[in-house]
Length: 178
Image (cartoon, rainbow, N blue to C red):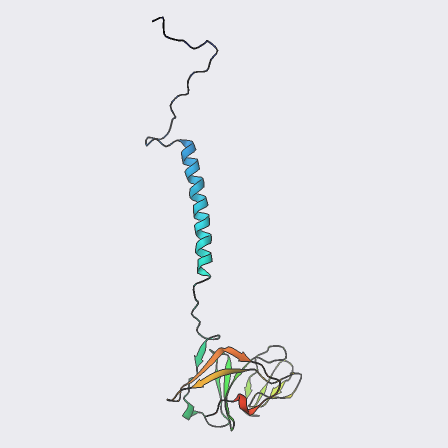
């Protein structure tokens, strides 16, 4: 027994085995695992949000094609049909059909149709437009904007509210011939 080396009196004792939970995970391992799980959850959330930006949004109502609630044969010359879902008026003149965006080009008010005077009359600043959307009085600098439209063979009318066109003056070629 003389061959056994003894540690000097001032030396530290060897480290004890790590104390942990019953399954053998140490406190350091648990904190490290929690940190990596938190970082992974953060980046996973960011990747999910970023990926959602590339997912197409299905539009309905304004900004998408909106059908007119009446068929072509139900709309006479001089009629104005209000379509609230699409924010437009469908007008029929001798030149054809027009879908007029109901926003005043002066300051953006909603321009109602006055059936008694057969004109669009802005209540805010007095702009007046005729049935084709041409400005005839008030501070509006140009006619009402119009939207693209299609007339089906069965008489259904579909207005694409995502394609709004500005104009400086009314031209009969802007109306859809029927």
